[in-house]
Amino acid sequence: MFYPMIQIYLPIAEISVNLVVMLGLGATVGFLSGMFGVGGGFLLTPLLMLSGIPPAIAVATGANQIVGTSVSGTLAQWRRGNVDLRMGFVLIVGGVAGAVFGVILLKILRELGQAGLMISLTYVAFLGTIGAMMLWESVNAIRRARAGKPLSARRSGQHNWIHGLPFKMRFPHSRLYISTIPPLVIGCVVGLLASFLGVGGGFIMVPALIYLLRMPTNVVVGTSIFQIIFITAIVTLLHATFNYTLDIMLAFLLIIGGVIGGQFGVRAGQKLRGEQLRALLALMVLCVALRILFDLVLTPSDLFSIVPVAGL
Amino acid sequence: MIAMGTTIIRLAAILLAVSLTPVLAQKTAAEEPASQEQVQSDVSMREIAIQSNFTGVEILIFGSVDFSDSRTPGEGAYDVIAVVRGPDEPIIVRKKERVAGIWVNGPGKTYGDVPGFYAVLSTRPVRAIASDEALQELGIGLIDLDFGRGTASSTPEQAYRSAMIRLKKEKQLFQEHDDGVTFIGRSLFRGTVALPVNVPTGRYTVDVYLFRDGEVASNSQGSLMVTKAGIEEILYDLAFKYPFIYGLLGVIIAVMCGLVGWFAFRRD
Image (cartoon, rainbow over all chains, first blue to last red; front, side):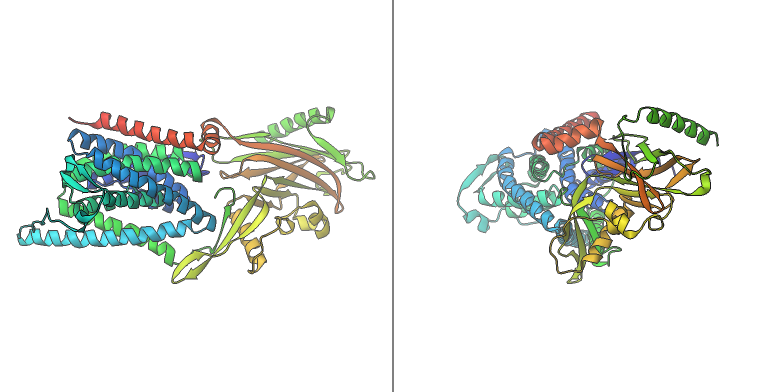
């Protein structure tokens, strides 16, 4: 196999990585995110950790990579008029608060030497839950499609407890008149996840906007990816400023690979059916969760580890 | 053989120049007035620049014994120990413990002054060259190295200390080469040491000790500088001196790549 050994030294991670491997990693994640229409951060950050990048650097650099990929995605959604700017800004306000909290949390955990563990545990919990739910849903959908039954129509337009909250605001683009509290809270949770896990948080944001706020689905995807640019940009800035964990060189390689891989992924995704696609994604998410879990449970080959105090 | 021959000629030329101008950069001091011989040494690279293609570098430590009174190359009257030491830094050593089925980092132990890089090269095993006391006094050898005060901890200290040495050795940041120095002829000697890709930056000291009958007959000290250079230096400086601007740069690069990608691949 043609496997050129072009090593490139990463100035912040202070290790030498293979140029082709990192470009390939970016391209693979970009391909998958293009195919499934997800951000891909939940795959990229764990993969970076598994390939020897220190967890905190993987998180900050992963967030930076998502800035790049979500710009392309937002432009496509913007042209179709799928971005609710007002909702986006409310989500961003909540997101900034969550991001600040997440960055501080990560800084404290690093000083305690528990950052890697907590990131891994949170990943296992999130990826395990979401992967299992997606797999269950998509397998049922495939079964129903085989049996020839129509998909059950979801009831919409019902009022729930959310409509009783104060500080209401009009969101004409989404045809909503609701309290600003739920979007602020959703934004905050996603901001926290983004800064703590190096993910865009679309996998939380999209269902929350659909099921809790009852926003129109087409506007949800556009608005979610729009606010992801800002949240991940702020997360990148915060991590760079307070934790010194951003590696621009690594981020650049991943973005280049990701932008190219993403284009092919979109084309590949159009050839697969929705529920099959979701089942595949669910399996992949579960695999990543299991892999991280194994690392936590299996007896490590070396119980000891060393870390420079300055590099915290 | 030809390559080796040219190296020797080159070494001899350098050494001739060095001995003609003894004040040139290297300090030479006779420890004991009774012994005549003096050691002079230098390294092949005094400046090491870490650039994006850096994968480690091998440096040559060479020197000569002036007024050597050994008549044949194999006589073995002299021994040389070279110590390459990088800047000290505090290190935390952690041990994983099993908590509720998963492996968790336990309380760590901090050592204040751990050399970022430490290599001992010698003509023979150091313990055969000099007594433990003499080695300890000179700070030669990992066993006797003082890593500064460890923080108070109830756990046994020796396990953490040896784990750190082992991990540093695995990363090639600690090295011991018993046959790392060889004599060429009566007075010339040379040894190579490989600095791995993860070498810390800063000023390194290179101490060369000439032993005779278990006593230091002469020593010589030199130094070398490891710095990041080119784009690596710019990014590293920016990241730690102006982290906000560095972060902003990261965001701008990402946005530009996203825009370029979208315009390059859009099909509408």
